[in-house]
Length: 251
Ligand code: PEP
Image (cartoon, rainbow, N blue to C red; front, side):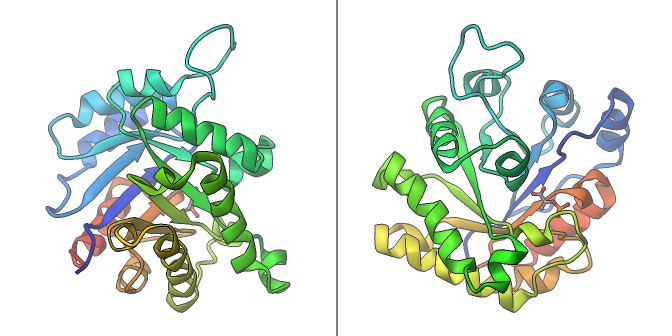
């Protein structure tokens, strides 16, 4: 049985008030049978949600603070995302790990913060090019999953979305081949199977890394790829809608 396809837009730090309005005007209602989640910058979350309200899409944030409230200048709590109507939080994105020194320990803290606030974590895992060339890709991904497992316990894998995002494919235009992606997705599903017999069939595992409307069909047709986490291509409403249509073909 195929899982319900899931496509998430990670706008990263892009957007303006005008761009949000233009996007909303160009965005068609998504096809039925899939989950579509927008993760705009915090600054535009409310505005985008208002513009797309009633359009069958859901919302998430790209990162949260670890803490729930208090003297943490510049931070945004997971509870605030929930308050704004978000349902998801991206956790452990490679740009956060690399540019903001988010270690596995911090990723676990953010995972738990999302959970406490009632947000579903979208957990990102993936290897660098060097790690892949050294034959360490599987080990790196499993270690990232192990960190969550150790920090959050077996319940970690209930109500979670996982995104396999090879670092070398993010924003580079170089996509993993469908076979490369499927291979790692099967490894991840097998990992989940060893944690709970019920979950691996249900958990959505997304591929992320230069997905676009032209390559989405082949990626999403793989047995263990349940959709995508989309960066650059999600900034164009027409392109992102094409990716959603490709996902819907698998539902
Ligand atoms: C991402 O940021 O999660 C991502 C996959 O980016 P892109 O689609 O641009 O490679």
